[in-house]
Image 1: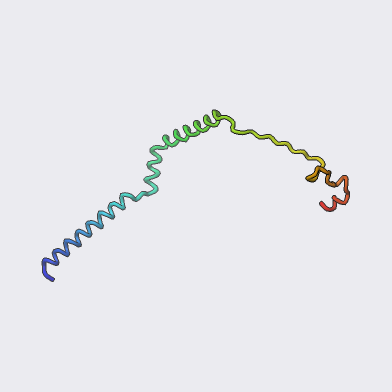
Image 2: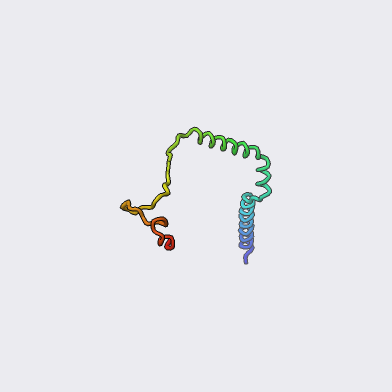
Length: 102
């Protein structure tokens, strides 16, 4: 192998190594560990508490200020059952045989 080719190959290899090192350094910048996240949260805990309180107060205020959108009533009548035509259906009191069938 001629010396010029060897020197060129060495420069290319060194350049590639530098690129790989730069890529690895960039990846290390994006690594996040749990300890660093917890340290940041410990420093700004009061901001989290204040924002949660503001959100709770805003939600409560919004709930009390809004108008009712609907209301409903229901009533249940537990009496003599009827069929679709309004005729009384035989029950336990009017038909003793129904007690054994129910």
